[in-house]
Length: 172
Image 1: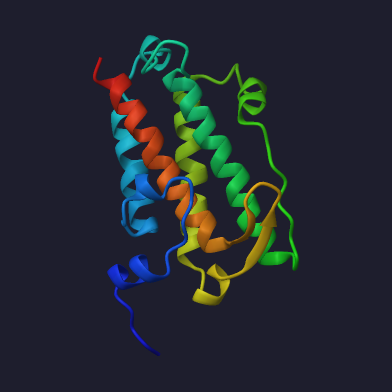
Image 2 (image 1 turned 60 degrees about the vertical axis):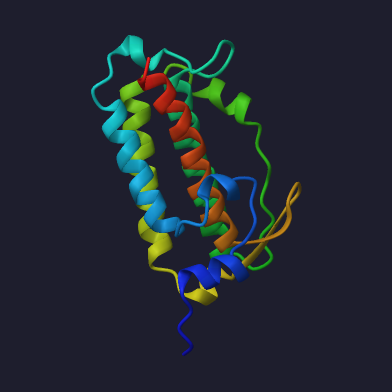
């Protein structure tokens, strides 16, 4: 078996996702672990009012961002599991703004805990995957042909993207 360094992998083989720049060459599973820890540390002591703060006018509140992160863990984790267990799996797109509305009554602290639990479950499953598992393909109506590895990289970068927003909110 040939050993490939992470830097070599990232430069030559890592998938490109809409959040590649946010991930910035970091190993995705380690990044997920660190980002989830940072989000939990940041928001764990917030008051209900702080969960309702936003990073910019007209943008989601911290509570909504946390709901979105939990929903994304649910949706993308499910996509990976379906791809791993269903040959020829075709993912279904979802409207994130309509999903947010379905969980609008969820509190900030509950959204934080849901995100933490779902992320831990997904990251644990991802860590158990072989290279062949990570190479499992699926298709998506907007993105075309994807792999489970693409999902992993997407999720890691997506978490960082929203961490930056939560840090802005927490700094106010």
